[in-house]
Length: 152
Image 1 (cartoon, one colour):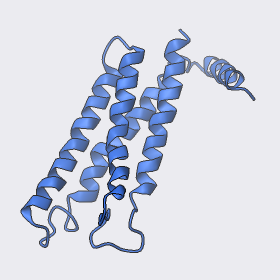
Image 2 (cartoon, one colour; image 1 turned 90 degrees about the horizontal axis):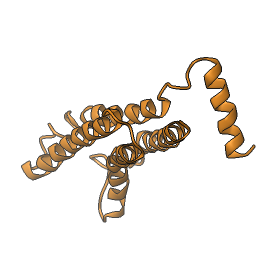
Image 3 (cartoon, helix red, strand yellow; image 1 turned 135 degrees about the horizontal axis):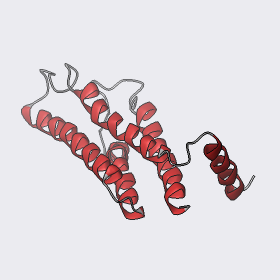
């Protein structure tokens, strides 16, 4: 089935159930943003990270900076996504901002000697089970919302 045919069927089905104007794409990107906002504190505001007595103050500084960055990126995403006067530019900005935390988290594995958990263990990157789906939500949300706003 072609992409156009799939969107045609989806659009007609949505019209039948009154969801044609429902911003599903925005909701998906918002879920990802809220996941970043909550997830960074859920993963790090505990004894394994921020309250870890073996971490020096500078490591805690970077951990705090990372949690704050997740908050700021999430709020910026929601602002660009839900501000009045929807546009393709604001949607693109929201999708890009929503992706930054996850992309930089994944890029950390490229640096020598890094581990996403402390102490390192066999499952050294458990965040992948959260990061990749959140990035997938952003992509799906972007494609869905872009189609919705350009079809009007």
